[in-house]
Image (cartoon, rainbow, N blue to C red):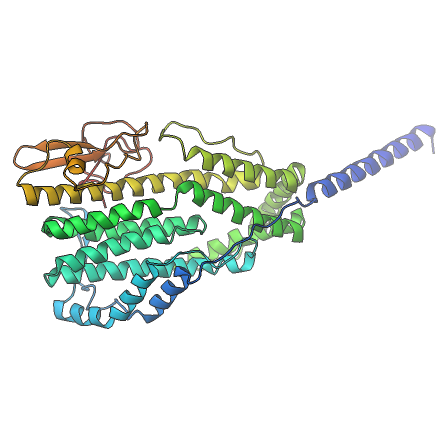
Length: 460
């Protein structure tokens, strides 16, 4: 063998050994678990979470003829589904059967709430999701009760049930993850819908009572900053446990398995049969996992973990600033794990802002209703609601781009009014409501919508 060939073999062998050694060093470096102390998670006693779970077990089904008439249909004129309620006598009987449920639910509304699943308890965290869905069903029960009481002529009890659903929404956001906040948003929307349906039939005393309860809710409302910090702590604790118990390949393999399982479950819910992946599909999936594992190792567990915590902390801090639709979020981490997960949290901020704005609008509208009934006309300005004792203070507009700016208000000809928030664009358009591209009114206000969020027009 010539010296040249021996030299080439030696060089290739040395290069291969160096590459293998370097790869081993990178693998060890990339898989080193971060140092982290899982935060303590103390539960209140009694815990509203447990009481709500008991309430749901007591509930007598709302489904069937008594609650929703099977003759539901889509109304082309209003462009929404109409769900006619069943016979009043049937609904009254069903409401009576659910009095124990409503009493237990109201007991929970007097208690503190915290999810019993602790940070780092990875397997148990999934158990939270079905329970939160059950809590949303309790809000729907309250909506059913509100509508039934209203049809029975008991508007005071109808208003009470509607506000109970709103209070339930604020409660389940406490000391949980983002899932709790989103379910809370849904519960508040259910309560507001029931309230808006009957607001013009409430007498002054009932309207004042609803205002007082809604005002009392605000100091107890869980801030979105706290929601994000809780999410950070849960996420970091769970990531720490996963990182400690699996290497990069195992972690990405688990991730892709969850994606595949989610796709299968979604397809089954849509009535689609799962197809066996082809050899090409499997090869693509394997290649994606190899690429992600490589990036995972390059960015390291410690780096990914630290960047996740930094981003969530900075995002939480931004929630204390005045609203700004053009504000950029914190610097996004460059690793693929964080880039897939973290954008979801920034998007969720709009839901929270919209909910706070819509509930505050309902509170002011109720105060205006009571004022008009007792004084014969609407006030010239919203400030008169405070000086006359109908509100303790005017709420800030969550969509305003400076602190201290309240809602827009105008007393119209014919003893009507226009009450509005600046809406997602942050601009005061003098009560010009958000509309869809086709010019129709939009009930669901989106992040990029232009125009104002107008009470009784865009609210739900």
